Image (cartoon, rainbow, N blue to C red; front, top):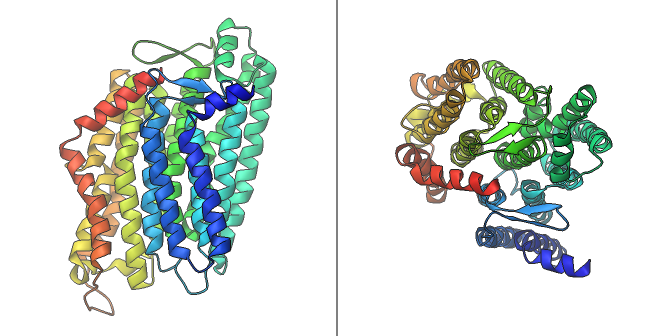
Length: 493
């Protein structure tokens, strides 16, 4: 057993590095309480090294370690890179956030918790045992609860953390109950053994349906899918903008990676072009399709009425989860590759939008859409960049968001899910309405009150460009991203 653990640790290097980084950050905070920014740099460096070690993983079709508890393959590495880059960008945002860097606030533990959250999401990408999935989800969830309420002097921050804990506890309990039912049906927590048990048949379809729905509650809570999304708008609004941005991208990526692995291996059989359902009389793909429709429709319709930018982007994030669930429904190679491609693009355009909201809030003292009136007259460059991010989130050319949605809809049409593609297209039209509301305030309305120009530091302009340029560039040249996503899916099988 000890030799097996030692052999497994050789392939567990990124996660080990994050664990060491977390311990170093905690100790540095205790020993050097005034070195807050330096701890941020340590965390940044640790996550960067973890990404580099993850990219070094090249094990053919992948390997399973720790007695099939954890998989190391190109699929998990892909999502680790997405999560790691998101965490690096959020740390960079945090170092320049006025709401975090106030006098007297201890940020050492904040950066340590960011590393712990990143570790939890890394574990989610490779978990191949139901117990490991649950533990990874809990690690990322518990750290998220603390970080979402980190500005405890603000009422909405404390409220956000409390709501997050309550919804998270309910979702975790439901998922654990579903896992126990599935264990009773199959006699195993290993998703490969579950697949064999499913193939042999003889399952009670009603009991299996209940188990699947309960487990979906846990997955749906993590990716903000309706009807498990109720925590999202309040938590996004009450959390620091940096944490809101991380939850919108990295947490969603970890949830999708875990859910894809669970259904693609446990409930399906690999084929040349994708995966086929192995459970007779149980159409779990239709359940996912229904959740997808509900998620994107609810997210887009409710976003229309929002006046706070963080809440608007929260409901937008819910809608985008619905779009990605559409591609997951078809369970083809092209569908999963489309989700992975979408996450690369989503990283830049969504983090970019949150970053602009953050630096504007620091200048305006508000996150309200109405306070964006006439901003184009006061800060034209920032408004143009924000418009680019919102156009990309809508899915219009020539931005990268158009390419992401194009591949999602192509995967649906290729598998003849025409009705689902039509609903997705109609939802994209609805999303344009609430994004245009922001455009209208920035470009078509006169400024109210102060009309002085708003200036931003070169550092802030540089970060906007770092996120804006890929959002435009990948809308014009995207073939390397597509090839990388498709190769990662093939290695996953």
